[in-house]
Image (cartoon, rainbow, N blue to C red; front, side, top):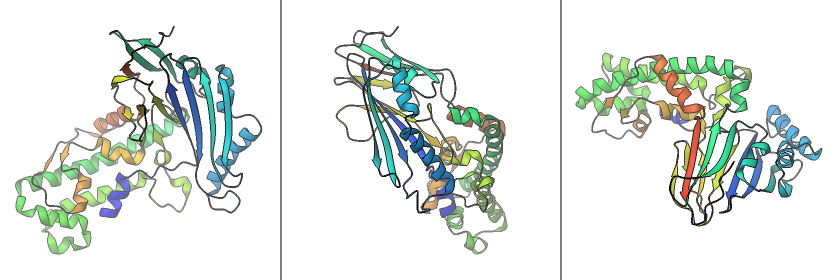
Length: 350
């Protein structure tokens, strides 16, 4: 089970083209914006990438070369100043397109975004010197809108399959909770399923095989699963979910302190002089861990084969409960706030 379960629990999200927006604020409320489009590594002329990926990368490069880049057009709409841009790498082996610009305020970000799905503003907080950057979502990212009906069907199927796996996990945990002397054998059989028959009795074999079959069924939704026909891959297998289609990060002004952030915003762990916060991104494979039933230990921890002191598992009531949890996890929240204390507060937005 170990390799299969590990593949499900680790993200294999690797798009051909991916954007990252970095917004660096100063105390006046002005913003320095850097938008970087990253390309999957490979030579476009030597067949090192799948045809679909090559075509997607080439479309972006062509638009940039012809002066039709969507981000540069957005900077123009937003009245950006000091706009610069460059292609990193070569035409045959591109690495990234980097664009930089200065905006007078974060409100201008709405005009700069190719897909404006949220209003963004800075405002004074309830306490003196407190500043709040607020994101009010009015829609979901474009990939979810475009594929909504298919995603709905696939999320329903994913939830039904995952409910079966989680129920079988809880069945096994319930058994091990009252049979502590069988924990080592059961965990061993999960890690080395070829030894099930010699390690377990018939009842235990059914419980462990149920979990293994559930894990195998979930693999159908994983980007790590190999397929003879790429068209057989569920659309959600190649997707990731965040508040915005691009990665979106905010670097706070110098002197920002006492920072608070809504759920869905994470502090960057990359070394920097100023705090940076980014919207969380989840690939479909990451959902397994996020929506897994409350259990001790997590199912993925059993791969190590370490003896566990206790087993407990809180069940979902039905497939609908799983599906509701998935949608709650992948869709943007209506409002996000990033707040801090600033010695000199930026002017409030309109």
